[in-house]
Amino acid sequence: MQIQELSINPVNINSELNPALWSDMRLLPEVHMQLLRIARHFADFLNVERLNLVDITVSGSNAGYNYNQFSDIDLHLVVKHVDGNAELFTAKKNQYNFTYNINLNGVPVELYVQDARQTHHSSGIYSVLNSKWLSLPKRTHPEATPEQIKSKARNYAGLVNQAMRSQRLEKCEAAMEELRRLRKAGLETNGEQSVENLAFKLLRARGQIDKLRKYINKLTSAELSLGEQYEDQ
Image (cartoon, rainbow, N blue to C red; front, side):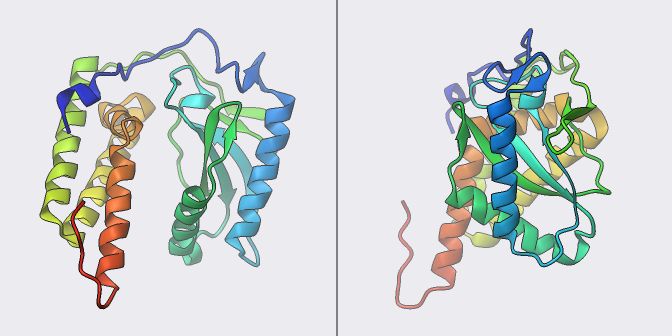
């Protein structure tokens, strides 16, 4: 990855919630109804006999003031008793987000399954099911400077590039897991405005996380195939 690929400003604090989604701190009626439709569709896609749904929430940048043109809508199905289905939910979530390209007023939607017992770190959390804020967003600027965030993102980019150059599935999977671990540690320590989370989001906005994910899928396909030689692209 070239340095200029990380040249966008990762710190973005707006004066209002995204007007494509919100009005007077409430979801636009058509957005609200469509999010419920999407959530039902995702629930059917999960195909679990007893989903034990607790809530449907929106969180992340588009439930706060730090959204930008790369931000998506994080739509969470909050459920009880994830333990026995954790791997299934993760696989289904990835499959759903890969299969369906859903946008609301130009903003992409990404689906998640969240354990009700899990502490979720976000500047704002809105219950779509109950039409109320569970955590009101605040206009908080990150303590980390743009230079620190870009520096961390470059380190992450180096990790991704090194793993992909190895052309080894275990190295690429380990790199993805390490990125997720670092982001999780940052969220737990300093919240959504942590340097680790912002660096991860910057890398994701430039398509590097998705590139690594697709490369892992390609290597996995090659490893499970017979009579086909892997070709580096």
